[in-house]
Image (cartoon, rainbow, N blue to C red; front, side):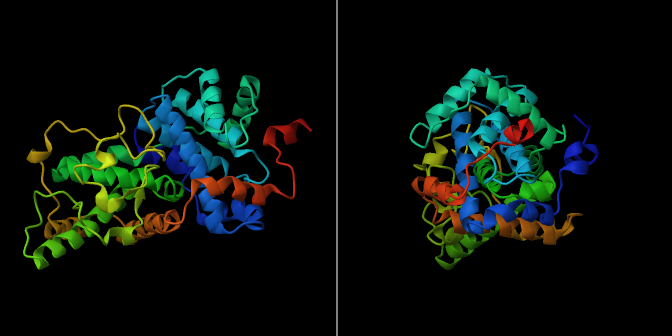
Length: 349
């Protein structure tokens, strides 16, 4: 792996412009709209996450598999490929690269289990292994992926954030993998955007507390379980359908389940949530007056942070209407005019 992000293949080859991604979606968008296409992709991200959770992967493995899936579809359309085969192969390859080896039979078995009521998974070990070579070619053999989790942890340590604040920002990062921000922006910028979202939400809660005569600010968690207007009440985190406003509630499922659940990195084993050496009582809540100055002093493009923030918030708007059971019908509408073909079969022809 390169010593730092700026000299890595992730930075030099896989930070893309939006036109390339839009061009890859043109064929699919002839048959369905952008929101439907987004929901289909979200469904496959959830499948990857669920398999990661069942096999107890580290969060980074699931996130890397999703990034591979996204990179593949910057050159291919969903209509002309079988995303279930792509997803299984991405998981298999990510396990190798992230040094979390899994036998290919286990991955195929879990994929069949995940798709048992959704058309099944008809590929054997030979087909997945064969497709791995095509996936490597499409990824241009640049397999290093930098994730924003490390950057967020370092920033939180520098700010001495309490664990509940860090955990909430961590969940936002999990959700960011359902967008395409990892294709357009550096990981540290995505981490800063997650922190920015938490600051905005905390400022709203802080103002509510002051207006109601209550205390706010330093020492309190980012979001109160009683907040009713956070993220337009559509900020779902993970496949457990947890509202952002409920995230820090003592009885919240998010505080009982590692990670954010079925999504991009929220699927997994024992390292799905950030850990710190100190207890949450030793940390500090977000003091918004200090955070405004802290962001102002950063040597980064603030407008870029806002762009990432807006893209993540746009996801929550789509997520509000997301129903998993409707996705198979969406896939059928996408492929009804032609039989799906996998890229390697095209090459064999």
